[in-house]
Image (cartoon, rainbow, N blue to C red):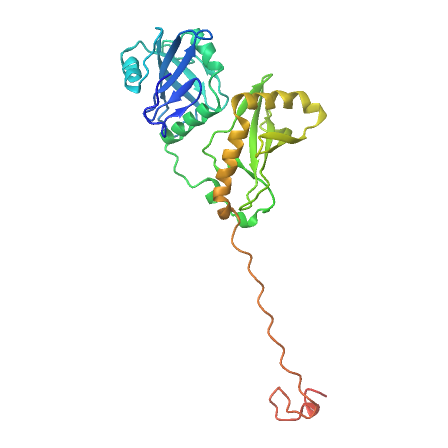
Length: 306
């Protein structure tokens, strides 16, 4: 695996590294202690701001010798001088496949494709998505800053993709049906509940949504403690929950997101509730023989006190 030239800026997992200049390197080890193979890639993003495609095309060069380069410069040289092949990654579903309908792109070898399908995880998808957003140059005011929080129930959890719409939402394909996962967090500043809720929803063919079920998780332990799943959805929910756990280190992901919500929580409480004005004190009651407070000059008993 390539050494980290700058550990603070290189995103790294057990089987891949993403360098600040966009170079993405996968390592495939052959056997328990066998030689390593490297696949050096460079993602290419559609520059059309109006295009909503969610795929990333990757130009890749494989190093099939027993000792791949161990420094960034050597990897960059390998990429610049090697024979390029191509594959693509769908940011929402995590699919890895050959480019579709693009005959001019020589396809990546199938054995690499098989490897990548089990090693493209949620962290890499999020990292690529951040590059996608930058390439699209999204600048409109959206997310938590554009919401009137004074009209929201302060006790209700907030949905991650509503707060941060530029972040990717996990999608899953199961038996030709499309589902997505929503993450829900507490927005009370300084809240110590340490909980998150994960909801799975189906996108039906008519564009309507159907909830499959949800699970509540203890963020301090990264474990689930409550489910709300109709019996008819039990098998589907289990498959989706397993797929989510395979894609993510769930405890780390949700705890990180919860901290990010808490960082902006003071901004999500809305303006302070206006206090009602203090009542005007009533004037002292006049005695019957006192001058009438109306200003007539008569005694109270002969005027307004009659």
